Length: 556
Image 1 (cartoon, helix red, strand yellow):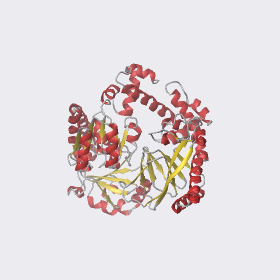
Image 2: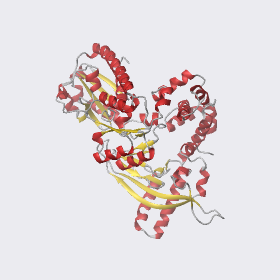
Image 3: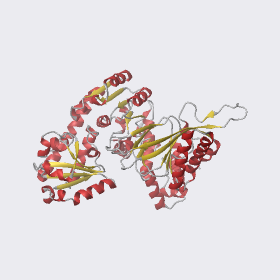
């Protein structure tokens, strides 16, 4: 059975059965112990120089591999490709332990070709051709723990007998990744996904795919969405749009009407509507703008380019507070950037961008010079406001008119909303409280610019001093000191945020606030800007924040 995940990751000529035809050699074992991290910006990076396994021995913490976030639990096993920068975070309150096993994989010598080892993919990332699923949960946490301890201890001794046992343990882990019970359902889903990828432009139905997976229609739809994060038809639409983008990228490609037909749509207007909803850009504009390779060096630069109807070719997609960018723009961002200067420099040299946009205060002067050697570079002053940033980027890209049009639309929308909300809010001093897994924080003057500058909300006395520009963690007891007439609460969407909100809502400090007693509290959620204002301080996220606010007041 062919595995569709293999196709997605370039494993398109090795079946799962090929795992038994390869030879494996353990290169190194490293015990990684990560203490609890205090802030959401703290993280550890693991760079894989060869194919590797990561085995978890603790509950808590997360790994981000190839843009996908995974929760760590005992017995969680990850197969990682070479040349990947993996992000490790731990906010669980206790240490997290991982075992990193680096290895080689190769075909055995072929008679008549000499005794040289034949690498899986010479000069490239070997794991791209290995037929193992990227994630597996070992069936027994205790057995996984014993294996974890035996490998860690055995490798440290250096004894030949212990090293041989470690080699055997590598094979055991690889075999478990294929045979664990959870993986059986996954492989069935992968078979259905392979068929969907083959026939997405045709009339394949959910019933067809469920039959291939051997599941009922209902169970298949539920399992599919749980595994891939989207429904079957949504996934098919994404495949169609990805193919359309590929056809648009060529200099002498087919016409738009031909592309629409080839990817499975019958109406050009409907295709344009779906395309713009997914990318935020009309197909014709996308086709023109994506011929430029623009690098967005920092998180905020992504949102500046999107407002100008350009999607970066190189950018960081490790936003810890949202998967918005990873989900929508994975196809366009061909070069992944991180928060390590040397890694980024190598990635940009390989990507060869036409232009680079960054934030001056986030990059050391010597590194700025190195970026200028790669491509024309614009470095923005972080103290300037987001409108100034957009205008500067627009001028740099030759899209000054587009920047002014975007700001004009935003200002008109803000003026209209300001007039509508004036009847509800008046000049009440409004405080924005963010409730997330890290606790309670308040939005400062600059973070709340959409409320105070664009919508005309009154500024609480506690923010007038300017001590809080972005956000500050507070206790429930401190909320009364801000002097707010009205409170806006943005709640995170995870269980930790729910628990934090329950604690706050039950506290006497909260219940005694004038705004709470008078019923002047408004609730919102799911707005990326208010999850991390300092990271989303750019035009396009600001527009999404403005669009979300009416729902907080029941007029969206």
